View 1: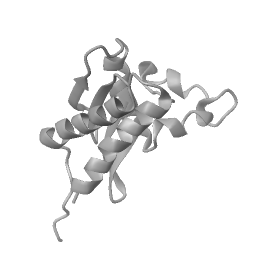
View 2: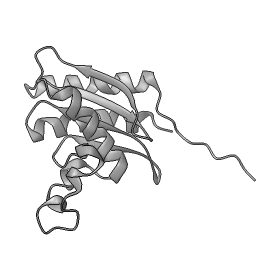
View 3: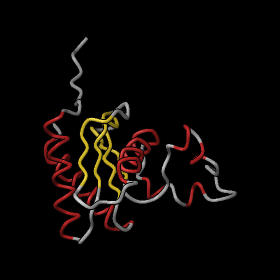
Length: 143
């Protein structure tokens, strides 16, 4: 049986992704926190800009965790968790850790989620843009 090569998130890449997200947030005029997690949703790297909101150290990792757990961008969950929708009540699951607004994106290696990035502190569109900048860096380096 042949060996299967699988990408695993490492600290160096995760830290560079945090930096890339901060650069993008700065361009958008936002002060943010950024978290990168591995495929199990465990924190690998975190950065908080000076002056960023106090909720960011909780929300950014939870956005990244949610993106990994559900294999979907957190912005795509908003309508799905509304009252009466398919996933109504989801945000109260897992001790309230699931987030259903913009800023969390999964990181894919082929058909497998190998990590996630979460950004919190700006508007939804600012958080999303900063997270996407980190994903773009990841995609340029993922084998």
